[in-house]
Image 1: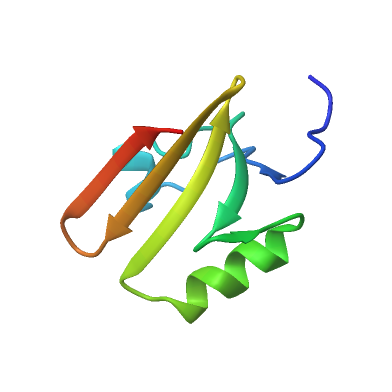
Image 2: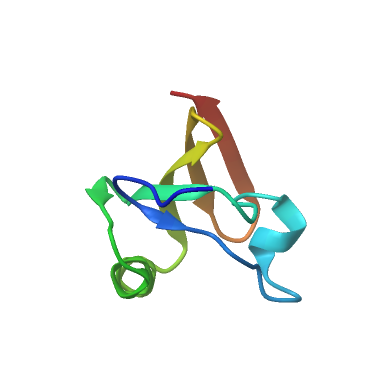
Length: 82
């Protein structure tokens, strides 16, 4: 698999992480944007997540299929094809 033109490739999900239970994102997915802001490095993803505790929007590319996902802690989660 080649590197994407934009975004951050998910290589692993930490044990016990909410993302692991939800299966979004999965290893191999590309996170293209967080809260509407394009990302190119892991540090950008982390900073944007820390800046918006409790509500996060992701644009994920899974094998060429884009999804817009919203997670609102602790219970609301939804994705739609983009």
